[in-house]
Length: 57
Image 1: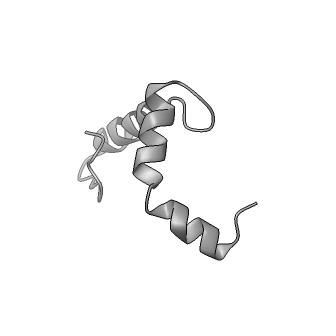
Image 2 (image 1 turned 60 degrees about the vertical axis):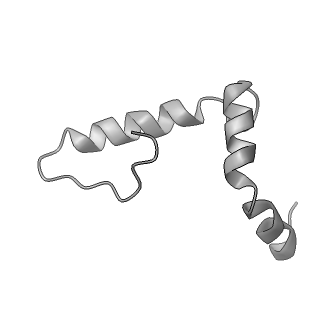
Image 3 (image 1 turned 90 degrees about the vertical axis):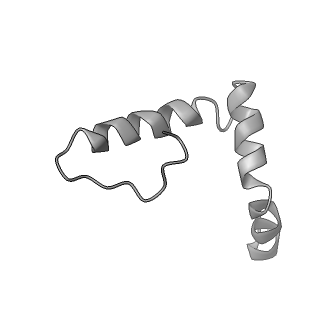
């Protein structure tokens, strides 16, 4: 289990960790990009919808 300091240190490399796990289809972030993409597209189907972070689009 990560304590607050460990989590803060890991947070700096979060995007890299997620990207590697997603590309290699490994736990815990396998399919992460697909999930974000599905959420983005579901939101954008709504009239006047706004997504604050469009990194997945």
